[in-house]
Image 1 (cartoon, rainbow, N blue to C red):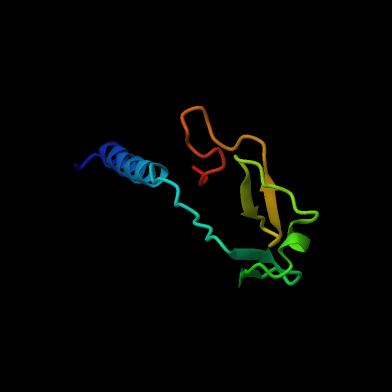
Image 2 (image 1 turned 90 degrees about the vertical axis):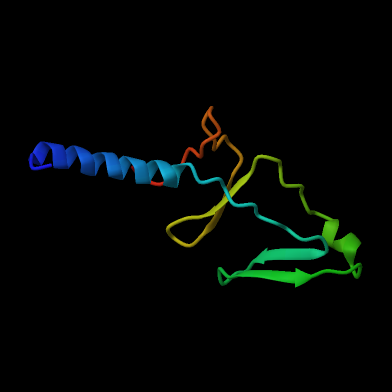
Length: 100
């Protein structure tokens, strides 16, 4: 391995192998618990509340179901966003993954 070209090819192959392992990692399951309310506060903090039946009717009034296939993410500005448009490629990989 004295040739600079050969060394460069080996380095590129190693980098591609590491990138492939990173991209192949499956998504983590986000487990929401029953009887728990999740909030994104006015100060940008996320909170979890233990819920009961007190005022349950009032809580549901005006509430909307989150459509299946919704992606939630925090932007670079710290704001919470949601996206209902497609976010997966045809092969099931995440469209907005790490920069190559």
